[in-house]
Image (tube, rainbow, N blue to C red):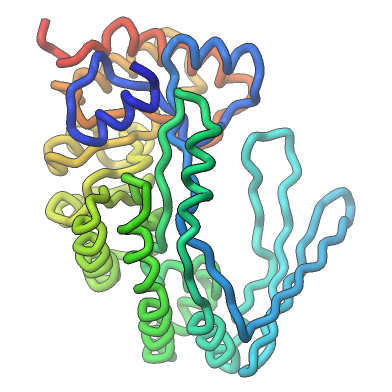
Length: 358
């Protein structure tokens, strides 16, 4: 059984030979160590798009420059309702995944609402199923592919348009404008879900990174749950599995997640890094596939602790169906080799399904 076949079976709720170990994307350098891990059973949960967007009436220009060894990107967006600008800095490091810091948000004040709303409404969408199929065809047999779709518009406004400080002011003083922008974005994005539902992808991740200390329970109930309800209906009709990236503390809304339309959860991170154990999640989210993030803090421990943590996760996952031990974050360069090898070796030795049968 290839890694791709094993992951597909797990997400379909089937029992396979053993609990898989999978990286979210290609998170380690290509080379001998990667080849060895793949040969020993490591899998990859990769991603490729199934739709593209164009903005017929909006023009965007990005200029890049270097200052003190750092790469900056200045973006100017011109709409018939006004001009928007933003600036970001790319973190340069020898890593497999890049990080970008936003230094200047496109939303500067209330005068920008009209331009931002026009920009959002101007977006048009079309399938690009060939892109997804080509990525699958070129990939290693160890890789299984998901695709992505937008999460809640409110989260996009908070983290991609305004930033948290400006959002807090606008939520307090002009909440009606924020909600009107949410409605405009949701109306525009509705077409995406129908495109995704007809796509060749089986797994669909709809946003995520929802943090309770920022989003709060009421906004989760008012925005996230209705979004999952609507999107879930569309995707399930197309035979897709709806997922979300929930890597923060989840106890505040654990009951709601358990009763939601979600089929799978990406990046759930067990204690000691968050406020829920894997046993908590299995009990409160029955029937949902968990592609967890192996607790990041444990990578810093010795091989013995890493192995014992892996065995504890296996015990809490029993009987082990709908469960993948994953890596969804970057791991320090000086730790991933020992950590990944130890996790994989432990799963190969103790992760035979059903867990706990012997």
